[in-house]
Length: 131
Image (cartoon, rainbow, N blue to C red; front, side, top):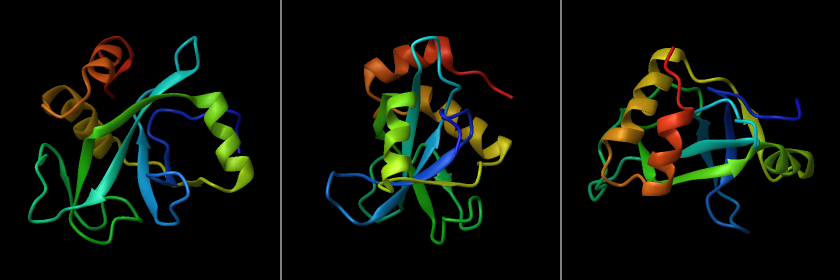
């Protein structure tokens, strides 16, 4: 694997440390000069899901088997180079790139969701590029 994550990459990683259940995460920007990028988690849509800003259908990514949503409240700014240690240790594993149309919908949602952390929204104003 490369030493960095890139715009549109996806990977499987637990939401909470020590948890075995993998969740799909999407990288929203190519890392900046400080190697920082934003990642968002994808979760299965439930009746009580509050944030329905972006809904993903089965098949929009090979890991999505049920209708899902982008969990903007879990969006994070990470150091991509440091995060790659999780791939080397087997805690995270790369998956296929997300298609451009879906990626752009997810990127737009980061600004439209009222659940996006303010710090992440501010960071994205300068780092998100649409294709």
